[in-house]
Length: 107
Length: 122
Image 1 (cartoon, rainbow over the protein chains, first blue to last red):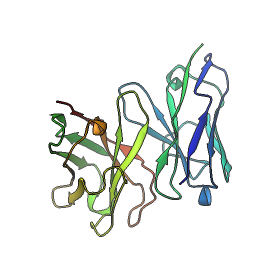
Image 2: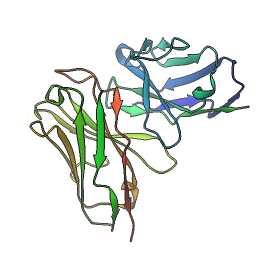
Image 3: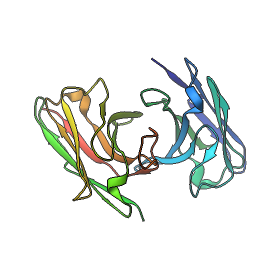
Image 4: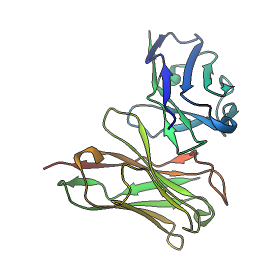
């Protein structure tokens, strides 16, 4: 069974800074079946990235995904005030599984 | 506009039952696989169950297998989750979520409802 680890647990940054979030799988994720979601307090998750690097409909291009195999990255090129949230990765190459999340908060 | 609206959550005693519903609109419901995903208070996300567009394929997480039953009514544009033998660890917000692929399953989720809270406590 695949285990997903996200790091760091919390990322404290200022608006305008670059955010780099990591998602590591204990086994290779087949066909880069890796998605990223954003969740704000009291809201449902929102799909950002699927297939490791494809942006979902309506997602700004400051969000980008990369990686393959066991190491994946979500990059937010310049943080906007609305980007402070929790981010989850999800692998869907086998039974769907979410990572524990990375909280991006305001420094 | 795609909308998913869950209902049916509430407080139930351990061992009790509850039926969740999800009303879908803004898309051709009968063409999409649908899912339930839950989130315990202050915790991460956990996939619960999936059902294909015609109900031919149904899957459950091990944690709910044998206790929960997913179903759908395409004529009513509705998704359901029958939850029996509830445990304290089933306490969570339950989200209805759409799989973006039409005729098959991709296993990621492009639209989510706002969720309904299920609390299992004596």
